[in-house]
Amino acid sequence: ATSQFNCCSDKGLLRKPFGGCNQEEQDLFKLKEAKLCHPVGSWRGKKLQRFKKYQSHCCFKSKLSKIIQVQGRKQLGIGWGDRKNPDCRALSLEEIRRIDFSKIDFSEFYADIAEKVSSGMNSAQNKINQNMDSIKNGDGAVINDKTTSDMINKKIKSFYGGNK
Image 1 (cartoon, rainbow, N blue to C red):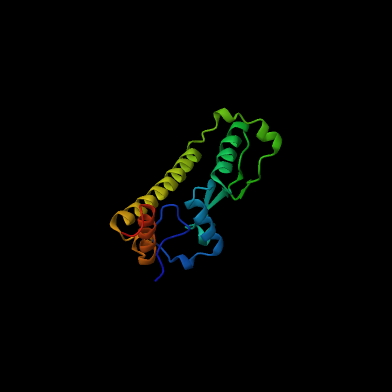
Image 2 (cartoon, rainbow, N blue to C red):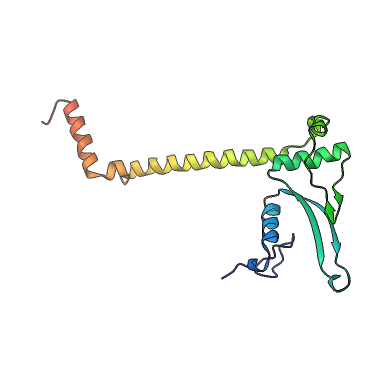
């Protein structure tokens, strides 16, 4: 069964199966879903395609590069080109030097970092809790293994004076 969604729509309207989109549309959908794209413009088709809406985007490899591109271009007065032919070029080193980074809002980037750190900590804490529960319940691999358990008991007995 194919999942039904429109990879060509920002609204998520259910129109056609994922397989109905070409590879470029699928890739763009994934980039937009990851919030790595900046919309440049939209337009309607001509004559017979007048009901079809087209959109152009500039997409980036990371949220950090997107943030710097979008907000840096705004500061520098650099546009995105024509909506049908967007200018997605990288900023030059000279242009980057002219950006006032104190005026860049990195909150979206910081939120991603905080989420990853929190997720990693939660994952580690869950693993520790599972191991502790396993030991408490006696169903952990170390405690449940008869040979290991016997060996530990023998070592404890020998430490405290042998087998009496």
